[in-house]
Image 1 (tube, helix red, strand yellow):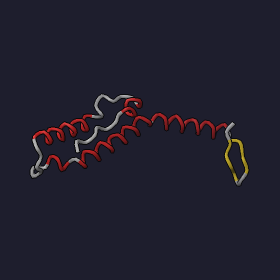
Image 2 (cartoon, one colour):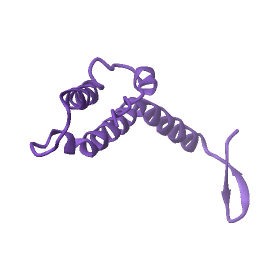
Image 3 (tube, one colour):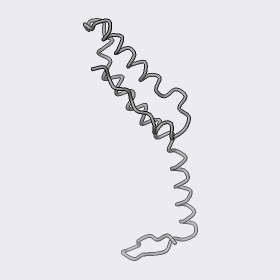
Image 4 (tube, one colour):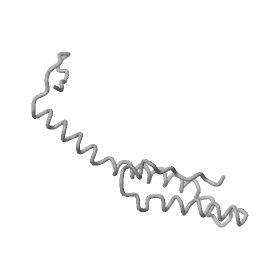
Length: 99
């Protein structure tokens, strides 16, 4: 049985408290995909922001370097496409920048 501490004393949870805890656990688990996608998008957006300089008109890059940066940014933008499960989100690694 589950317990809580009240004024330093271990007390058994009521049936209602156990039910509420179980409902919270289910709700938390149900939101796992959304939290993981939000984290992935945040990391992706940060990487895109960090590479914005590569597409400025006054940046001097060779055609090969420019193509590498453009490809990198395309990979970043497309990274969330067709990702439907938590396991798929968790298996994604952001591509390495062409530095």
